[in-house]
Length: 457
Image (cartoon, rainbow, N blue to C red):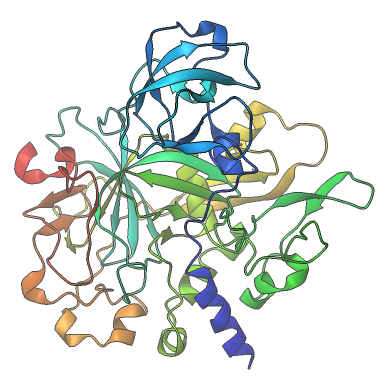
């Protein structure tokens, strides 16, 4: 009976991606989006009437400066508007003219939006100028981070992290993980879906006296079943508990785009000291025989790993999702050491604060006890090939468990190319043509040109 309850809970967690907007947050419909937005224009007086500006993220546009249910639609990142009038208007609104949009906007005599979501320059995440990039091999459920060694990409990249993932189940188009070339578009701390089925890992709630106090999740080491108990779910305005699973998105969540199908990269339930316990749960034999406890397409990893990724990966970082066989370009692994380093973390209650112990110390901890957990994360910096298993030889349950190396059971003749995990290169690669695979990301870039060995040699 206990096992069945745990398995039911694991099924519920797979839908922890996406969610509907909430009118309570007037600009984006999402509390996290409105909390995370960074302003390049500090005041509406900086705007020039008649000038054109780029939209920084998906934001509602309205028929008046009254925050009510008068939304005419949503303009998206890199849509273009022209400022018509800066006010004075209510809140942060300015009057604009929609110059270019990919969305269907209801016709109106006037349009208003918050100036906080306007940029003077177009945000082009596709152009990769940084040092780090990520490859997620859906076939082997591994995430690896690489550092570019040569500016012209003519020498092998250096792998600096390898960790496990749980990807979407092999069921239908809505829950499979899509390969493609993506970029990190936004980071969130203690994310929850807008529908509130999956309340935040950590949150503050009002007590009977109206003061905010910490509302904690289950303690470290507790069973998965505890993360489903109603006492760990917050109360609504009527005093009733809501939510299915506490902290399904874990400590941090990276949204990716374009064409992500709401398939993000995020943590999971549990504490840092639980290590990869809950990732391994999703790959156990009996769990996958009775139900499929995988994600809805998101790439889920443990909380220590996602905290480290948040520390080192800025917005704009490429996340390339592939489905490929793995090999070593240099079987001797010269330049790699099997001795792992550690990274110290300090997870705090401070919104948007990273978890690196050094970062937290440098930023200073605000008054009160803001630390939730401290620990050390062992960085796996030694490439380990996961062997491909022929899809025609794998049963459904076998492919979903352990390290079978072919989670969607793609047949041998359909696999294309090879992924050299020690070099961060692919050669001869293209996504297999298979019923379980759909492609997202940039339509004209399957993998980054900097990792395509056929182009850089």
